[in-house]
Length: 556
Image (cartoon, rainbow, N blue to C red):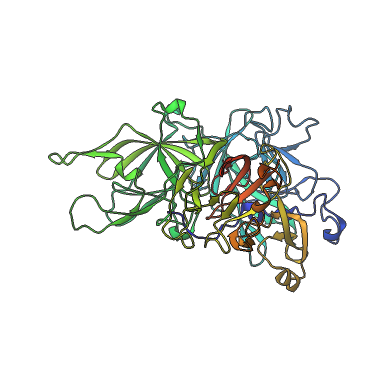
């Protein structure tokens, strides 16, 4: 089932205006305009080995060569092989992938022990990739993704380092461990990130086994939580209210961060592909979420919250009591809305060997024709799964996202449903041009660290001496359903979307209904986003094209 929970987009968490005043109008410029010195330089490396850099410029990047332990000044950073890391305020880039030619790659170790780490782990090392779903334009890497190097305090609007150790493969092929320690200088000025780093030995494990993770889930009581993207076991204080875990295992039982198990964007489905190497991407639809399941074994054993497909991962021999993994692959949606693949390779008394790797989103465009019902009722559509459905009570059901009855359209919101649905008109005819959820207004807080808060109302913003502005990049306001006049002269009304009610032109002479050249954004019942375009209407049958971004994503 879908969970009716509020989902705040990562636009706020990315702290747009820790850089909000980059290139912004003068109305949100802080005073003084820039605390950064004219020349961006490395400030100090103290006796503890902590390096503090003056990366406070809003425009310039500071480049470091870890191998030489020095600052460098590349004329063309994209082609320069000398630098390893680049800093600009809280943003960090690496000289690899789409950013540079140095083949620098990074692995993130959750809850890592910096002092004890002497050898680089045998796990996935990531080069910079194209920006995906955060609100900046910089490349994604383990420093900058939704799980970034910092934690953000919404009370005092400050950054503090998250509990990660990063392992960096440099341009010269050496390995360094790095731990962020601060974001502020001694005076409390932001944009002066501090960290410690040191050379360590390269991985000694077999690179061919880098996608393996051995998990000791032998306890009958405790769940073991896993970040499948990083291939690490993580400690979670409250798994029901955290997006930091993706998979939980207790002996043979498995949960995803979804449904009855967690508040994340998780889910899973059985992969149609049977060859590990061939599975590189996944469509965004068709994922099931967790629900209450019957426990295997004793008939009267208590049930548990788990994933219906993942808990069929093994064969059990009643005579030998052996648990044998099926030759099956799964596609996982993580707690943050990313995608990975999973294969369970071995099981020995609660110790599992998992094979894990990341997948890319395959944003497909689908075509759906909704035929009219004889009684004039609505046909309900679940965009998460791409299926028509028949809810018993549409006003309380959270599984449907869009409903159609001839020319009338509903979203699961307002007077039509209890979900988080709604619609928005981006004012473009081309579905391909709808590439992301556009920005709306947010509260810029110059006294709170020059950050933006998308959740504050106008009054709350004023109370904190903030400025409501569209420069924050907060999500656009979606219009929920309301009572509308029914088409024709009847004078009756119906519940529907005022945005989607304008999808057609009507010729009173020929009585022909013609779709306008318009595309729309639809917010689903659980706060995810789809884009749609109605392409045909004939004898009450409505045809539309649509694409589903997936939970936690705002780009198409």
